[in-house]
Image: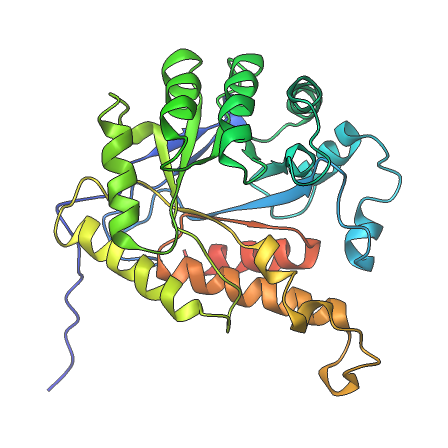
Length: 313
């Protein structure tokens, strides 16, 4: 008996969130099928790939990254170069220097850097914070005001600071926010409920469900993302129907397999090649689990993941 495949579509769908302006704006979400299931129904907004760089500049300790940004001295120049990376759909600035446990850069200087980047880029802009909830709450309020009209995505709004960030970013200045939780479906839903209670609709919210490098507790990431997408589509849970974005680069380039010198582990091969492999493997995995966008660093990773997405669509 011949096999007859029945396409699996759902009455529910993932909400659409647009970042950026003009013809380079990108829209995340909108699908009513499981991740990458373009064989069940057309996916109007394929997953997007972003390019990450820090406010201190790109990671020039990695030869391929250093070569790509060669000659880009100012942060504005770095941002322009990132926009030209083959396969890039958007760029992501990390405000690493704002961390009170690090450089503790004053908020005014951080805002000036954000302005410089926003004026330089031709692609949509995502801004990641310092990971300090108190500093980020004050920082993102000022950034949202300074970049009014740019429709940027500000990450990350957490349970401890979501009110300050969400009200300033979305309601006051028309930006988008990333709701960040820690690899737990209940925490993700709870944060989305809290944001919605402020009167902010899902069309302004992207979820950052958390991640880990492939092989480093990644099964928790995969199972959480699977459960979120299953609840959103099969159970029509509108508090989990926001698109998801996953910053992959930080975890992928910090594990031993990516940073251990080749002379210490010659059988592992070149460190840069290992880092690229880790970044690609992790990105492909989170896309298969439900991410609508991933954020990467290395030009080879961006090109490979972008090609993967285009060939699956």
